[in-house]
Length: 135
Image 1: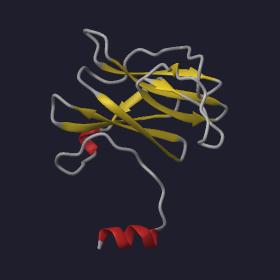
Image 2: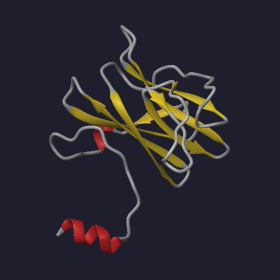
Image 3: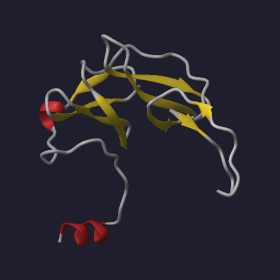
Image 4: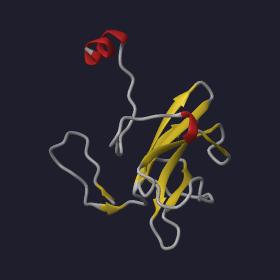
């Protein structure tokens, strides 16, 4: 994965290699990179930490998912992070809950997603918008 920076979408910095693929969330004063370790035989998800969304990244964790997982998305609910991911060989979506992003509790048996759901993310919308979408 590469990135380029811009302030006005007219000029861009040269592309640079970015640690990834993954998803970056802000947790207090630090940034957390949710990433797939695509090396063999791992094929699972890990986290790394940085003071800047461009890194450098440090403290790469042990895997917090089993093999054959990818496409992480994170959602902050109260003090907890809910991390959703594609369990592509199992043909389902999984989830974990964590407060410190290093110790996770499995939620896969407690969540459900529409059939065929793939990688996605979560965003906040107003109730009236949700009602309109559900209609």
